[in-house]
View 1 (cartoon, rainbow, N blue to C red):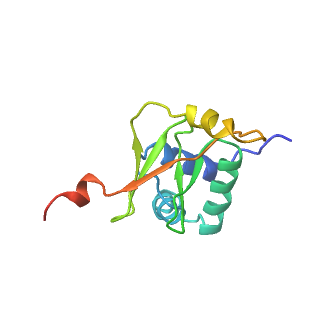
View 2 (tube, helix red, strand yellow):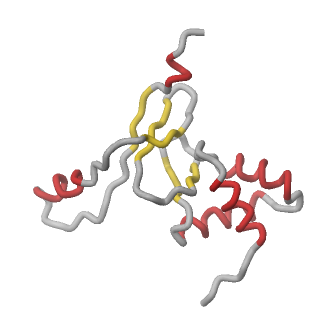
Length: 128
């Protein structure tokens, strides 16, 4: 079944593509609502869920109780600041080999992994 075109879904995806800060659904809603005032929070949540299920965006669950969203679906890693909650893309070599390492002593098949790095970001480590 072909997916019906949705102006709201396109606006949500376009907003995420402009961002590098991995916003929450509430942040997406507050910003998209400025251009499309009739959009509801439920519509934003449904479209974020659909876009992530379609693989057009990535849903990040970093342990802070809310989902963050990333339009960059390429394999990459994230850093989560435990002080301010910021989620940042990490520029680093792939550690995809970790899947092979984990699978070496496992009798099943590992399909992939999710890795988050935690600590304090540069802004939070600067003296006031």
